[in-house]
Amino acid sequence: MIGRQVLKNVRMVEGYSADIVLENSKIVEIALPGTGIGDKVVDFNQKVMVSSGWIDMHVHAFPEFEPYGDVVDDIGYKTGVTTIIDAGSTGADRISDLISSCKNSKTNVFAFLNVSRIGLKRIDELSDISWLDEKELREKIAENSDFIIGLKARISKSVVGTNGVEPLKIARGFSSETGLPLMVHIGSGPPDIKEVLNLLEENDIITHYLNGKANNLFDEKGNPLLEFKRAIDRGVHLDVGHGSASFSFQTAEAAKRSGIRFNTISTDIYRRNRLNGPVFSMANVLSKFLSLGYSLKEVIDAVTVNAAEWLKKPELGRIQAGDIANLTLFSVENESVLLVDSEGENRMVAQRVEVKGVVINGEFVEC
Image 1 (cartoon, rainbow, N blue to C red):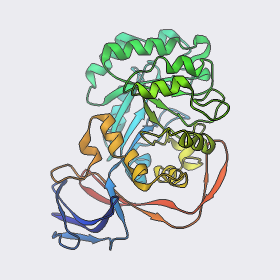
Image 2: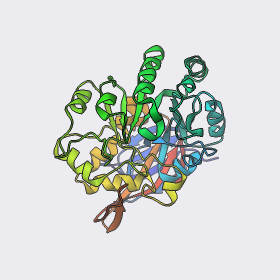
Image 3: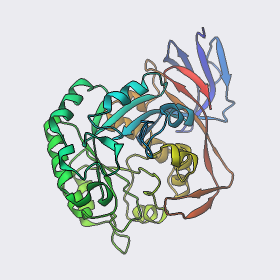
Image 4: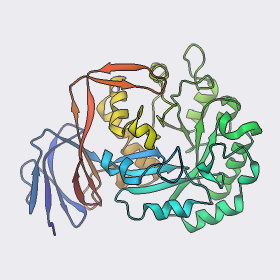
């Protein structure tokens, strides 16, 4: 059994170096570099950076559902992500199966419950209003309140069919009744994006906000829609949700020019876009935001501090003695790499983020 462990000479995002001492799954000391004492010492020689463990606010981790499914640890700690949030893969019918499938995983897992009871068993899960069953939804939330952190509604044409914005109105009611915020997937219309925006409230999440589709959040000149700016002013949270079809370099540049900043960066990762791209990993997605001119601190805060704040779990977004140890070790390599967005645009950039390891609930694992 390993006793006291020391991650020696690691660099913090803020620029200083330290030794992080671990014992009994917890951070027990943050010591001056080179001074930590333990039974096992791993010396990183100030070549590796450390942050609190990365949090991915939008993944699909129910492997039974195709095409949107994957194995928890394959998109979790093995890629440098210590906490994942399943974004509505399952509704009331299968949420218990999702929880069971996570029990033997190392990665920390929470979930948004799909407002459609069938979840992603079909990809038009809001095309039949009868699948929005409030009684079943409330029962599952009551049974799994430590696992379910919000509700998910995918509001785009292929999902809602002829129902337009009606499923979102129903989901809004579910949110009011349960006290859980909504994560809303946006995409092709109808419904018109303005109808969607007008229904969102403080602490709700727009995911895929940088998509390049015709029904997006910016006008033909690249300026943010008035309804979008009002939603931001109301406290609506902006999440990237890269995915196979929902991140555009050009839209991201328009957002940056307009002063529209992400709250959280997430991958919308599942087996297909992990293996074949354009997502691949959280590190790949973070590299894209570095290439857009965001600082390393802004990018890392988006997958640590900001995500933990939304989750109301501040301990997941900090490195502090006494907390359970969830950490991500990484470097920023100054070497050329080809990155691709969801529109198929390729860009050669000068830096990439590379994961070196994680500490997952006190266990150090090299990646």
